Image (tube, rainbow, N blue to C red):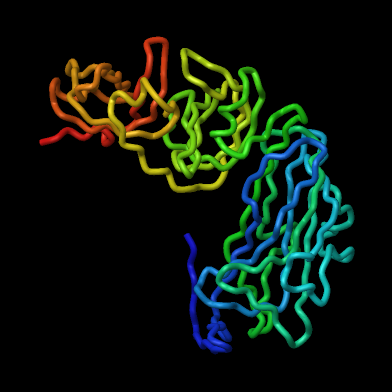
Length: 371
């Protein structure tokens, strides 16, 4: 929970832009890494952009920043990502001075390739840099993806040792640290022969037994040992089979697995999964009971079907019939069937098994019985 202490607030307006001149907040500027998650091939370059973003809707002056950067290591202490350098090519400020100072506190920069360093940047003397509400790109850091790994993290801790700390220094109040939330990023590094897809829809186009990896799709429903992810534009959805705790619904994980067809359903099998940031679950597609059997294949998508329930009280599945030639079987996870012959609207993910199409429903609230 963020706590902000405000002593005094004074805003100045220059050319129509609201600028925070004095705002004694303890956590005004968040430190973020963009992109928050990415999948790359081993041996390739990884670009990570360091951003400052105000958590109040104003443009904020800063004089300097110190950002601690730690990235994951293997069992021998070797980083999965090797630091290569940084540049400010796309940044609005070149900075009066910036880099990894060799005289850093607690010796964190003695070996800048060991997975631990602190980055420092100074604005021009007497001329603060301004962080707009949309965020300020500070620098782009470059790494080499040295080792295949399903989950490599880059984090920004508050402190390192006894003297090193992450700080964003206010441009108006001397020695005022206004750093807020400290973000992180994740990188999945896969072998060269793995296909990195831009979407679920693309991943489903690959032949069986193709290894595929991607990030960007959102988890729509999670079950015991599998979950479904869907492109946020609803272009495609797919089941992911893996061993472990499924990522939460609304999560955007990194996924790496093998394309297979299991009981008539195209899936990503034997997957490695790393939970990522959060996103909005796409709204369900309304369709009739014929759609799962003909035309474009909606397997893997979150859908809503309506019709009469052909059910047995308390059963874990029932058939849904809207008058179409083929009723759709509905599979319930953790709750019982609605009353027989009741009219229901059901939202779930459309999959398949050896008997044909099946609508998998995770939440009792997704079965709405008409009154």
